[in-house]
Image 1 (cartoon, helix red, strand yellow):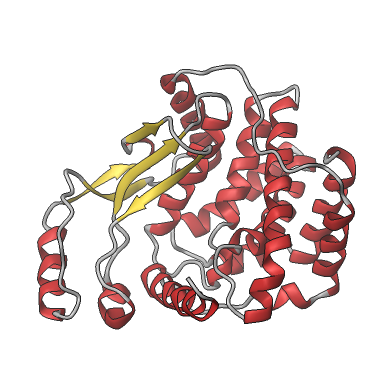
Image 2 (tube, one colour; image 1 turned 180 degrees about the vertical axis):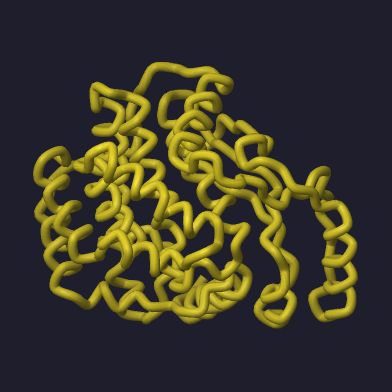
Length: 315
């Protein structure tokens, strides 16, 4: 695929996702700031090889899910955790040049939607490929039918975990459950490039809470920093062409690390306050951006926190 085709593909994807998730802004101007530049320089200076494989002891699927649910419920407390779930979903070949057919299928699908606790969502475990996960959603419509994407609620089809049969599995599962819980309140995240903030934050919190020795957290931080370094090296090309898509994890990481630093260093009272404020976004009462402001989380602070981690553990 040529450069122009790739740019068109990315712009299309951004428009579709923005409509689907209800994001009204697409601001990645932070990549032009001194704080971003300082971190990029620190990443370039760092000589740690990129290796995403970290060996941890085996854990069963049941143990992974139990640990993930324990931390997730610890963080959200007793708030409503029901999400829209589509069971027995069957893929349908749609003719996207026929808006009436899309709308008819949308109305048909909505008849089978039910509410389910996010911790009860079915998890599909796969052993192939790199470690990771995904929150599966139903997407009806495309860039030519944004009106349908705009009105469509975000329906969960379950969660996929891939090659995660160790303690990392719990952190990835919490990451994906966080996406699902956020998605039930369409438009609660204004900036498209902030969509990963809470998922990354909850992932780090899970690593901290599951292992009091700090070993799991160190592994988690190292893996995330190495992926962040790779993304930041790739992002310069994206900046040149003005279309950033795959690297939305970069922008989100600054806020996520700022939040996590406050949580890790905070007292029990501080941590409980953070849970309460973040729940305001989970409940749909306040946008993510407003919650970040209330908690004093900033991209500038996140940049400094990440730089400190790079110097300490990324060797």
